[in-house]
Every structure is written in structure tokens, then in C-alpha cells.
Length: 418
Image 1 (tube, rainbow, N blue to C red):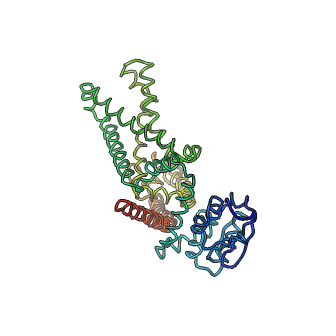
Image 2 (cartoon, rainbow, N blue to C red):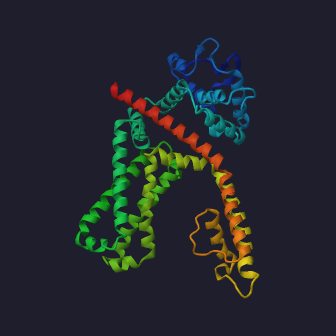
Image 3 (cartoon, rainbow, N blue to C red):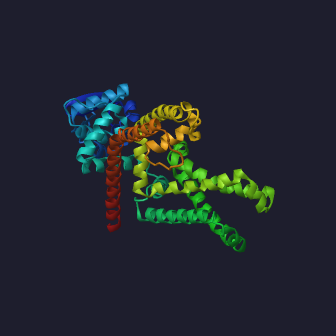
């Protein structure tokens, strides 16, 4: 901030807060910290609703009581809903100040998820526009042309719906992924070896082109990323690295061992590394809403998934022990050898609880069959218990991502028309 006094006053709905100018620079709320980068009153008025130069006071026409709870989050790190206030209204206040639903306490996140699932309402158009403008101004507050160019490049590679060029780039990437997967699947066919021997160069060229494209894409995205450490820690980027590395390891091993296909086929490590290219399919999550919804749902419902796993493990331990006892341990003359041990019975329990029933092993005694029926019914009940939570989270994630996708599509259309 290049104007005003050393003390800044925030007036939120009539409630005033005084902060030193240095505190404003690193303030946890994105909208407040943006005031430090404003060079003129015009830029200030794009962040707040009014400004008084004499008192260096910034006025925000927002809910004052909601901001009190947001300030408590700034001080204590815990964010909860305001009593007697609509969850969606408070969420809109959070978005305005630059917070997300992940900042809420877990109990409040559940309330917000249920509210969103019931109403299919997420954010108002005005707040979405405000949030988008705040991020744009935060990213482009450096007026240098190189910074803007890097930001455009980052959006082109990271956000497939941000521009026409980004959509073309995403389409080309999808084509390369499909092409590489077709080659990987075809390489396991019995007739592939003879065809490969006749067209060795063509297969190598196609594989090298695909790997070259993925490598170049990964390098460019790393160069234009804002935070290099955060880029390396992202799961999708780690998967990209795991998918690209096997090819270069294969090339190195070929150079070291010579052109000996028999020796290469004998290497178990090489075959495992080559099969890791199947991770390229996960790259499609960057471009398809369904895979993004699945990933976001699993991320938000990991507690329910752990709970489901605990249910299954406990039931599997109980039923496998009983099945081994009833089928193998009681009757010494007519033992069912399929249930010779508890680990062997665990396989029967898991396929029974999931109602798959391969038929490779089954109880032959009357008590064992009764136990099998109880096992199947218990599996249906246990698997159904967490489904409601996972379903509501999936619906919320789907509508949220679709809403953002539609917003980006409208922005792209407006940019194209202009």
C-alpha cells in the first residue's frame, strides 16, 4: 500500500478493527491482504465498498457478526458457523473473504454438506465473480509482462476450460493418452511380438513420441507453476512422474544390457516398470468431470472409507473364525478342506459379504450354511451403512465441479465473443 497512514481501520458492517499496515500485508484473509498491493484508491474500491483517506478506513458492506467468527478463526485457527445464521449465507461470507469449506471444523463441514445436498446451492454468481476477480488480481498484481505470460501459460496447462488453446492442448493430451494405452494393451496380445519384429521402428517411434509429449508437458507445467514444492507434492504430478520414468529406465537398461530382447523379457523389474504406464489413464482426471468428482469424493470421505474398511475387517475376522470352526474344526471325519485355516476362510467371507459368490468354496454343513446366510445379510447391512454419507458427498462434489466447469465455459464464451 503506497498511501494512507500506518494504521488501517477495517469497518465491516459498522464494526471497526484497527491493524498496523505490516499486518495487513500477511493477513490470513485473502481479500484483506490484497489491500496492501493496491496503489490507488481506484484499486482499493475494487476490493472494498468504500474508503476514507483521512482516517485510512476501509468499509466492507458485509455481515458484521459473521466477520467476528471469521476473525476468531484468524486468531485461534478454528472456524465454526454463527448460531442462528443460515449455513449457505455464512459460506458466502467465507468465500467473499477468501476462505473455503475445508477451513471449517469437521462438524460444520458436515452441516454445510447436508445443506448443499438438500438445496443444490453452492455460491451466488456475485460471490463467484468476486472470488475469481480476487484470484486474478492476486495472481496478476505484478505488472510485468513476463509474469502475465507465465500466468497464462500456467492456466493453459492446468485449467483445460480456461481458453481455446487450453482445450486444444487438453484434447491433444487425451489423444496421446489413448494412443499409449492402446499400444500398451496391444503389446500383451500373443500376435504382438511377431508384428513388433516386423515393424520395430514404427512401434518405437510411436512410443517415443507419446513419452516425449508427456515429458515436455510435465516440464512446462513445472516451470510455470507458482510453487515448485507444492507442484512436486501434488498426487497427479507424482503419478505423471511414475508413468514417465519407466520408459527412461527401460532405455537405460537397453543401453547397458544391449539389444537383447530375451534378456529384457527376463527382467521382472522391467516388466513391472513398463506396466506402470497404466497410470497414464489417471491423467484423464485433468480433463473429465467424472474422474475429478470421484477423486474429490474419496478425498472428502476418507473417514467413511476407513470406517467401512474397519466394519469389513471386523466382520471378516469373526465370520472366518466361525466358518473354520464349523466346517473344519468340529467334525473330524467330514472336514471341509477349503476351510482348513482362518486365512483361507477369509476369502470365502469377503466374497460372501460383497455378494459376489464365485462358488470356488462353499459350506457343506448345516451350521456352516446358516452362518453363510448370516454373513451375506450382515455384509449387505454393513456395506450400506456409510453409503448415505458417501452418496451425499458425491452429489455435492459433482454439482460443485459442474458449476465451476459451467462458469469457466461461460467465461471462455465471453472471451471468444469479445
